[in-house]
Amino acid sequence: MSNQSERTGNILEKAADVVADLMQSIFLFLLKPFVPLARRMSDKVKGFLISASFFIMMVIIYLEHTNITNLILGALPLPSIIKYVFFDLVCCVLMAVIAVASIRGPLQKKRCNAMMTLLWTGMCVFFLVSAIYTSLDWAAISIIFAFVFPCVFFIWNNRGDYGTLFSLFTRGVVVFNMIFFVASILLSPITGSQYRAMFTNSNSLGQYLSFTMPLFLIQYTLAWKKDEQRTFTPAPEGLHIKHPIMTLNFVALYLHERSERVWSLIGLGTAAAFVLFSRSRTAFIAFIVSFALWFVLHFLVEHGREGLKAVSKMILRRVLPIVLVVVICVPVTFGLVKCGTFAVYAYAATNHLLPDEYQYLNPFLNRTKLDDTINDFNDRLDMEGKDADQVSTHRTTIWNAFLNRIEPFGHERGKIYVHDYGIAATTHNCIIQILYDSGIFTALFYFAINVAAGFRALLYFLRRRKGDPYAMFPVLMMPGFLVTSLLASSYPPFAYGVALAYWLVMVPLFEKKIEKLEG
Image: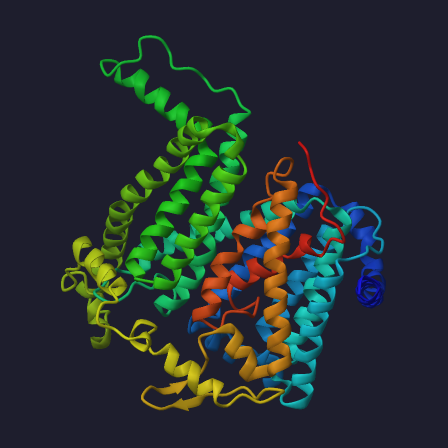
């Protein structure tokens, strides 16, 4: 029995090696002309190009969730087939920029984890089979998964410093988040309905928040680890409330020396405020799951051996600031949005620039209070007297309708009529969406790669937590996507920020062996 298992294992290993060798040969051929260019670029320029590319991709993903995309595509003198995949093509070009800018030193073939390689290959093959058999609508996603992401994986598997990639990705997202937050304060007022910020609906905002909150949580953890290695300026003698100038100077210096921690807390607090305003249960559940996982991994796994007293003190010092900042940021963010949008829309209302259908934006008519917003959020979480379909906002009805139409190799892109609901464009569930679009076999491989990636990400953290500050990044970025994927069809990486982050963090999981670090 053991010999049979060993032979089967050897066959799978050889099959994975053949696939990896073929794909890496293609990547080496395609990247060869760009290696001299990459070597001439400084690390600073490369870092800027990578972060800027991720920032532009976030802008594109945002635009795809607004009506602006129709205006852009309508103005472009391109064939309809190119317009259909235009934003995917732009994101592929940006991923190519990331790939070239990521090259450091000579590239060579690397052995990959057999399980991840074969499951990924199976998913890509059946995506392609579905595209050929049913509709070329699925050709773009096949190419993205088969070539674009594996090329980036190959380059970073050669480098090995995955923390650099995660840091540059974070930088691009954080810059986008700052612009997005300021624009929302000025242009997106809080009304009696669910807050959507700069998106066209609150679901898109919830999907965005599902991965930005754990991102800030990771940044907060990294900032703490950095600060533990630093020496800070001590409080001067005579510091007292009677000396306000001295006190203010010290407070400013105190915050400046801990600026990374402060900004990550502000990002986390404002994101939590937007979750409250949007009443997004998806984002709320994603944050609770991410926070619980972070708590277990950071305090119980990383520091559990330091003793109950030390861990309790650490929890108090690190969790209490998060609670306080969230409590402060909710009313402050509410006030900023009300004041910022008042200046814009009061001018529009006074000068009769608001059409009748947009009168709900008139700040003189809109009297929404923070208490009303909090009560509405609590009401949305209240499940008493509701059945599963009501709690899921009719998603169970939609799921059943799509499940009853599943074919072995999928369907063409389109909408279906759902009894007692109306027209449904998506299934609001990733696995059911892939089942319907690309067939049973694609969905099975998709499910398997998700399960395998979860175990590999946890293994990556356990083996590298003592020497890699970014060891937690892959596993902590996964719950947001997994929660979102149960309630939205959010798997395409160039259409959802949460999906882009999820597929990107798989890069170290293809390593043949995740090496254990000891310090």
